[in-house]
Image 1: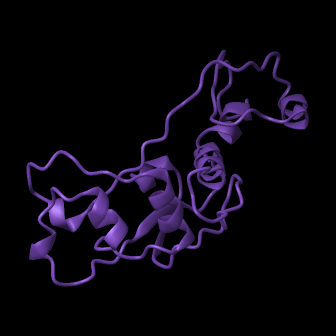
Image 2: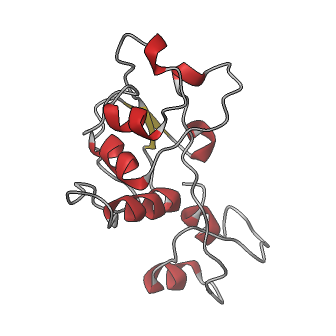
Length: 158
């Protein structure tokens, strides 16, 4: 990955004085890396990015996805951009021009990632969801979304 593993790998960055990660390293990782100090600095934000064909090339600036929708998208329960729940949250979009289902394709990390850990913890901990999430948080996750594109590193995800 780009974060935790690189931050702890002093051979890749000799002489580095500071590195950061989305996930706090375990005591064993800190000891193995011979790191002098680990401390929590701040909380980060993860911003899902959507490429929705209905708003492509438009000046539309308002598109809403809430956490329960994201959970269902990554669980595989919502598979189309024309799902009634997405349409209900976005009545300002020209849905009447769309006559077909537009499948959702998720892009996920294939390698271990602190960002994946943080994102999967948020989805798994959704208190507004009507049913428990099938997502098990981790550095690598078996997502339930049926159409997935796996990418290695953050650079390939976005």
